[in-house]
Length: 184
Image 1 (tube, rainbow, N blue to C red):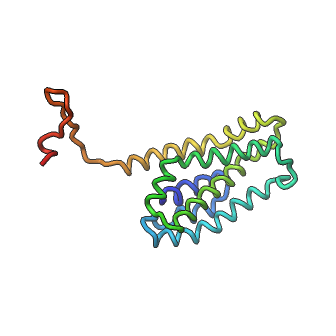
Image 2 (image 1 turned 90 degrees about the vertical axis):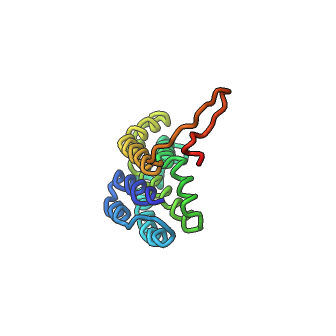
Image 3 (image 1 turned 180 degrees about the vertical axis):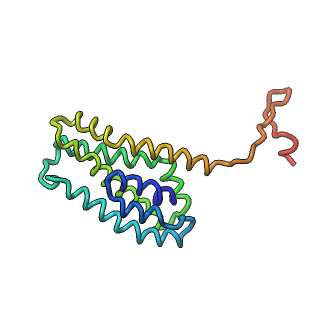
């Protein structure tokens, strides 16, 4: 949950040049429980509004046809942003804090990322085909996607056990057994 709020959402805000909101989220105290999460929700709300406003302010966004190339680019951008959080991060956030506040924080982080990514990919409105819009959106988002991939892998490194584990042993009959030291 902490990564989604203090790393994931701010990365997309920075990409969309919404650095004030990004700094406020990144500067929050680590989200280790419900108390910190409730404080983070107060910071997520204005960041969410700013990301939505940035996307809405895209020139001509409200006058575009529903099925134009720009819309295809926006959809690809939003999906890429959501996928960059990774299913494991979304699931871990659900396990960490499973109450309604956790659901609201996850949803806010996801929407911030989607709107910010769509803002970053707004240049796709200049193309005439949906396929070209998708390609341009992916290209525009590539630096942030790479950064978040590295960050997510570092998060996994921090979450995985660091103590060496003894592997099980196979006895003469081909059966797996715990080592004697681990069995006691």
